[in-house]
Image (cartoon, rainbow, N blue to C red; front, top):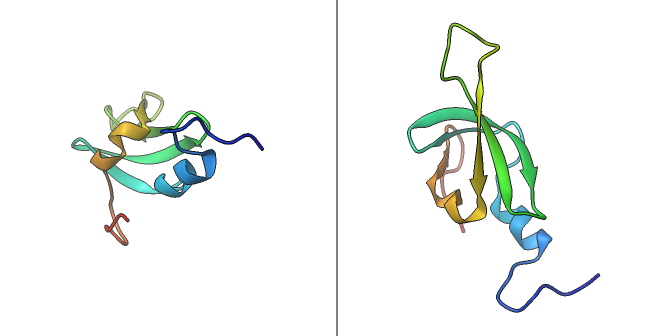
Length: 81
């Protein structure tokens, strides 16, 4: 395994800071479900329903590790270490 560049986080560190797939969250006033997590790039995708009457028209937001502070789980433990 190659050490991360100084000042960058390893994939394992990024993975512990991200919510697991299937977690229902609120991101910047949008309610959705995390559908994809990629610790290698530090991103996740949140599927939101912008058109609730049309299930085929769901929108996915890609969130960077730098915006994780804006993600709040809908239920469960709201503390972040």
